[in-house]
Structures are given as C-alpha cells and as structure tokens.
Image (cartoon, rainbow, N blue to C red; front, side):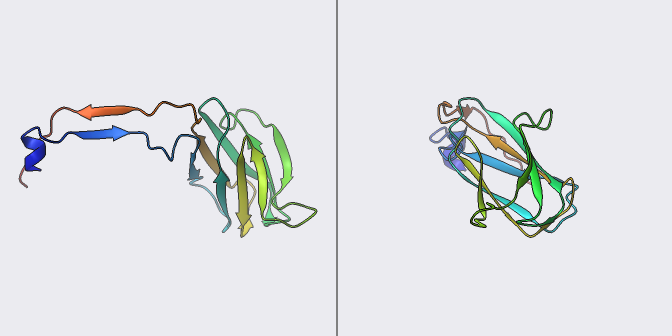
Length: 137
C-alpha cells in the first residue's frame, strides 16, 4: 500500500489472456433443474458475442434437449439438440465456433446459461488507476 501511495506501483485493470478466445458462463437465476453445463474449447469467432443455451426438452442429460441462440436469446439457430452425442453417448457436444458443452444432471424446461465469448483478436485492455484513496475504518 505504501508503494502505491508513493507512486512506485500502479494498479491496473486488464482483460486477461484467458479471456481472449475464451468465455464466461453465467447460469440462469431461475434454473429449476439440478443439471449443469460445463463449457470448454477455444472460441474462434471474430466478434464478442453472448450466446444463450436453453433447455427446450426436460429430462436427464442424454434425453434432455437444448437450443442455442447466438444473440442472447433473440433468435435460435439450433433447437431440440441432444445433450449428448446420439451415436456415442459422448457427454461433450459441439455448440459452435470451437466451443463445446458438457451437460450433466437433470434439466427442466427453460433452464438456461449465457456464454460471453471473447474473440482471439481482442486487444487486451489495460487501464491504469491514477489515484487510490485509503481510509481507516
């Protein structure tokens, strides 16, 4: 703290390397099922996007189905997709653009997840905090 106050060290906020080509997953606050969605891979798209994955057929992983929206739920590009690969029962299913989903548990209609995707071409943003105020409390 003393080094910050003397100006020897500056605090920075930055987008991490993990986020470029990566993603953040936000579970829907109204999810009623006990299932979860694990996302993996490396996003290869060129634009920052928010995808929404919503369960459109309740059931256990493998029988439940989902739909995918590349624009946060405004329109759907995939509907009634199996939550496991039909031919191999593989838990890892292709969503799009280098991103996979793994469904596990039991799902209810309407369970959803938003996936915020960051393109690999994103420039890391770095901002310097110029002042820090410390108070005793």
